[in-house]
Image (cartoon, rainbow, N blue to C red):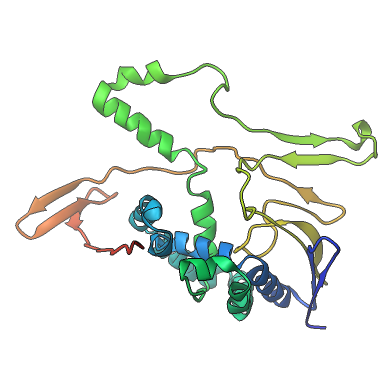
Length: 285
């Protein structure tokens, strides 16, 4: 056996393979068959090219992603992954190979491609990392930091307190772990809240992954190998919630013009010639 796909009565894919890499390839393949449109939308969003077929409504996102250099960050992260952890990098590559094998077939089943005139593209080894960054980049606190900075700039530092609220009235989350001693079945319950809207297609893909190394059932993120957010092995389970944690640092650029051009102040306190990078964003319509 190399890789097998079995679908139950609800169409949920159950995948079996001889090893982790082959299982990743089969997972990429079945995801391309079932979620081709979603995969390509997320790939274009991570690259900042979604306005090329979705139109002007997608332009603000594309501008943000280009300015954040998200695709370039994913590329550099994957290069570092190959250097530090070649086994995991090969696992990601195997998933991408599976996506590329079946993407054209999956697109042929999906009317959105014909409706928008979009042709399925090719995934790069770093594309899953870009998709992951694109999905999660706004789930931290940096938008609020930018907002507070604008308040300080226009109204003064003392004005920030005017917008403060007491208690968790505006946002919050929840995660639950219940001991089996307190449940009807006698088994524990774990639950989390990913803070997602009701979406079509759904942000998750129910799937079963089985190989000699592990056997896991859960909710995969289309475009990402494995099962990251919600899953269980029969003896171990995990779930996430949106912690809105402060894990991003913001830096204000300091630029100055000289006779030689524009210089930027680096984190070491040294002024250096600024690199210039131009992006062209295509917009359908």
